[in-house]
Amino acid sequence: MANLIDPVELTRDLIRRPSVTPADAGAMDVVERTLLGLGFACRRMKFGEIENLYARWGTARPNLCFAGHTDVVPVGDAGAWSRDAFAAEIVDGVLLGRGAVDMKSAIAAFTAAAGEAIAAGRVTGSISFLITGDEEGVATHGTKLVVEALAAEGEIIDHCVVGEPTSAETFGDMVKVGRRGSINADILVEGVQGHVAYPHRAANPVPVLIRLLSALQSRKLDEGFPEFQPSNLEVTMIEAPNTATNVIPGVARARLNIRFNPSHTGQQLADWFDIEAWRAQGDFPGKITVTSSISGEAFLTERGDFTELVAAAVADVTGAPPELSTSGGTSDARFIRALCPVIEVGLVGKTMHQVDERAPVEEIRTLQRVYARILARYFA
Image (cartoon, rainbow, N blue to C red; front, side, top):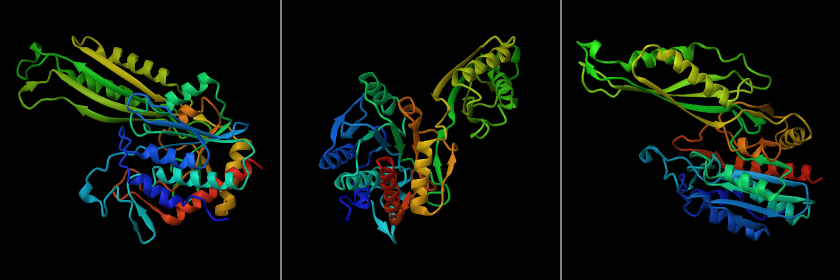
């Protein structure tokens, strides 16, 4: 049967909307218009300046949801791109453009697969879409609030597929069944500025910051956790604003991030930061302030019927079952897991966020076939 929607052309249409977070640039309109054409009931859910969409075809259960985001990261150096980042050009069978991999192609591929399944009369329950414009940003006005609103209304989603680019080296070699948690900490040490020749008249914040960071880095967080790699702490910024060589600075700052497995909770790590800050304070007359922000907790979708169904669908198309992994960064799956089991399936992620982000046209079509097999098995 011929495709009702060409996933490549729909991806190109989406890429041509420069929806760099928090801008929408008409991207959500493209998704909504396409889904309306397939018979979905569409509901725009705008929080702040962020456009979100929840759409559903059917009213019966089970309800299989596809989740994704239309927003993209900035282009960076536009002159470094071989083509306009938002022109969506196809060169030698490869689609170039911001969002080609992460993840406008997945939205298009699932939309095409859903249209095909609906036209064939194979959907015995419901298909829904949860699309946000706030995944690449701070993620405070996107999926998190949509999930909370749907839960409060009693909307039931039985299972969810997120279209993040999960494949590692070759298409279909990996899907994600969980993610590590993430916590950020901003550290501010306030001392007293002074002349380097008269240190007794100053309070240097730099040694205190070094002492605190050393204590944090010296702890081995864990050896890993079943299904998860070890937690890791990375210092991402250190500064002591000072333009002179003979001045003891008045402040020193640092920023760090921990990606953590279920050995920890975000709050436990935040409490640890505070304890180490208290120890580093000692007799320092200044002040240490640690501001923690928990982006998400670690989670795992347990092996079972749903993970087996998705793995089998990938194998139907690629000929080999995928690795079920929890590696990589965070995604909006961390919010959706409050509603239902969730698994992530998408393209090879090597060029996401890079200059000349790109996806082979044939892989976008192959992703549609994978999603079609998921739908066929799910509603069998």
